Image 1 (cartoon, rainbow, N blue to C red):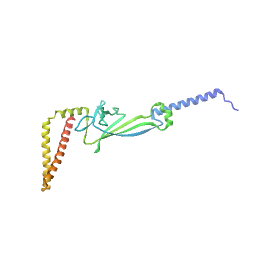
Image 2: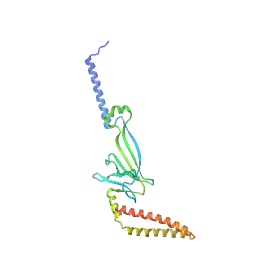
Image 3: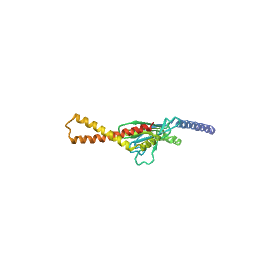
Image 4: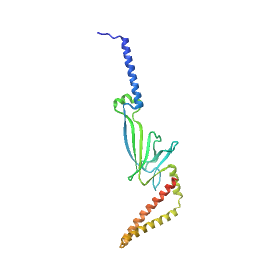
Length: 232
């Protein structure tokens, strides 16, 4: 039987232990720096979007410029009408990217989130102590809004509110009346030219529809003018 010197055995075991420790440290560093044993996981969340400001005329998506350049923006929004305090996007541009997109459907917020997760329980067991699991890589927020929305800075929103309050309502009503009458006359004249035998009932129905549409159009145009001034 071959006997192994205890000193030699101790040295061999020490070397194996040291190598194991070095290898473990290398893998720990790789996990921390290059996310060894991990993979990117994407989740997609779609939320309803409601106006961040109390405005009966139009829905507002607000933002605030951040950073020295002012190019980066923090968006302020709500996902339900009962929400008292508005939500803000992450101000760190390295962690969040925001963009606004026009759509014809109802407004919504689509958030794509990427995180580092362990590939399996084996890697989680060995590297879980580092705390890298579920680590955020980046948020991608896409605010999808329709024509009933406006995107304003918080300062522009305050200016819009002041402009709306300072308007002479008597003058606005006079302008609205003149606009509606002109639109109704134009549509009724065109309809009678096309169909001279149009009955009184048909004319009244057309007048009511044209009047309702003209009022809606006037309000929209007037609001767009106010928004334009607020952005100046």
